[in-house]
Every structure is written in C-alpha cells, then in structure tokens.
Length: 241
Image (cartoon, rainbow, N blue to C red; front, side):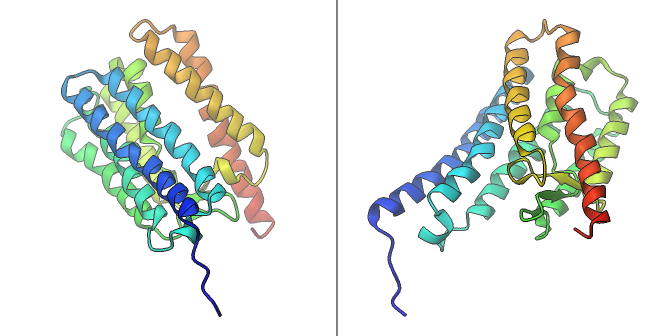
C-alpha cells in the first residue's frame, strides 16, 4: 500500500496548530512572572488567556487533521504538559502566594498537585466518545480566580475544605462533561463556557472593585456545569454507558 505524504501546505498548517497550543507555555511564564510580582489578578488574566487557547486548539487540530498529517508529534502530550502548568501548578502556586491556605501550606498545596498529577497520567482520563472527563478535570485555574476576586479573605479552613473536596473528586470514579464532546446539551456547555470566560475577563479588569452580585452571577455556570455533569454521569451509567 502506497503511503501518501501530506502536502507541505498541510504540514505547515499542522505545525502552526501545534505552535498555537505551545503558546500556552508563554502565557504560563507571564502568569508566573505576575505571581512573583504579587500581581495575582494579572496572573489570573494570563491563566484565562491560556484557557481560551486550550479550549480552541482541539477544534483546530481536528480541522487540520494534525494527528494524521504529523503522526510523529504527540499533540495530546504537548497539551497535557501545558495544561498541567496552567490548570494545576501555577493556580496552586497562585493560591499559596495569596496566603489563603491553612498551615502547613506546603502540605495543602501538595495535595491537589499530586492528585492532579495522577489524573493527567491516567490514559483513560478523557472519554471523548462518551463526552466525559474521568474525575474532576483539574480546573484549579477556575478556583484560583475566585480566590483572587472573592475568597482571599475567607477563613483558611473553608478554603482548605474546598481544596480537599476537589482533590478528592479528582481521583474518584466520577465523570464530568467534556464540553466540546458533551453527550447532551453541547450548545449550552460551550456557549455557557464562552459567556463565563468573557465575564471572568471583565471581572479581572474591574478587580479589586468587583461587585459581589456579579461574582455570584458568574458562579451560575460552574454550578450548573458540576450539577449537570453528575446528572449526565448518573444517567449514562444507568443506561450502561
């Protein structure tokens, strides 16, 4: 069977998609520098930019058939490396830098870092056909944003319980909707995520004068995401999915 070599133009587009994914590491550096300067809102802004890139690079990868055109470059591994930095390591560093963790801070920071590390190493973490992530998909960047704009004055034990709770469901056999492959209500999950991200950008620009009612409004999508994920997971298991 004759092997068909993709055209140089297709290869160029595929490389550009990988480069687009790799820009996440640049935003990670910018977020890290902002944390060093104690500009926590600025760090959140860069983490949200990285999240926007991560939310769109999969579509581009499928559009330009990157896996077929460049079979020797593992886009998923590239994505996972960037995502661990931007979704887990830097957000936990940010939360720690905000002084919002109980003592000993190193222990409380290590718990989500380790549980997410195991989640990223799980080859079954993404059930794209079914439309789920297995375990909480390490959205620590989302939690970090709310720590900076709202929860920084919260009792450290309350935040500790939040950290412990999400760390636990990271490794439990619960499933959460993969928005781009949602088994149902895909339009809601994607449009809701876009609206939520735009609202977060707006609140970060308002920081530190963010109205509490706006913060509570922004929480409606994460709350619905978690609730509907558990409902769809339960429904899928009941149907043998």
